Length: 136
Image (cartoon, rainbow, N blue to C red; front, top):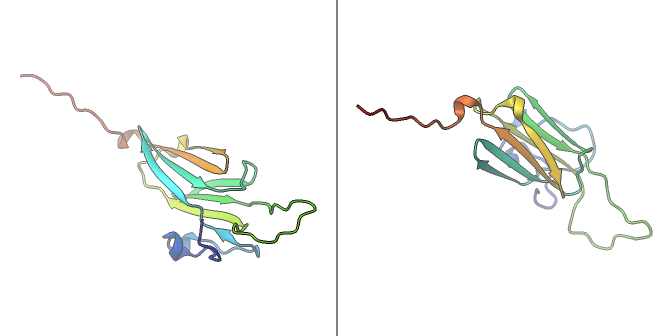
C-alpha cells in the first residue's frame, strides 16, 4: 500500500503519466503492493487489497495495459466511535503493461482474503523449448 497520506501519483507507481487516468471521485486511491512470480509456464501477480471483494474488483485489459481497480467500502462498527486508526481506507488502482509473451485469452484471476491473484500464461512462442540432439 502507499505510504500513509500518499495518494496515487504516476511517478510513485513507476508508470508513465499517461497510464494513470484522472479520478472524478473525491476519495483516496492507493497503489496495492504486489509480488510478481513465475511458475511453470505463467507469470503470477499477487496484489494486497484488504477490504476488496470479488464484486468490487474490476480487471481490464486494453491496448496491452492490464488495469486493476477496486472500490472498497468504509467499514464502521455500529455503536463505535473511532479513536485511533493506523489503516486508511480508500480505493485501489494499479496498471501493468504486458508484452507479447502473455497469452491474453487465458488470463485468470481469483481473490481470497484480500489478496488478488492474476495468472498470466505465457504464449506458446514464449515457452521454453527443449531442442533434441541428433546422433550422427
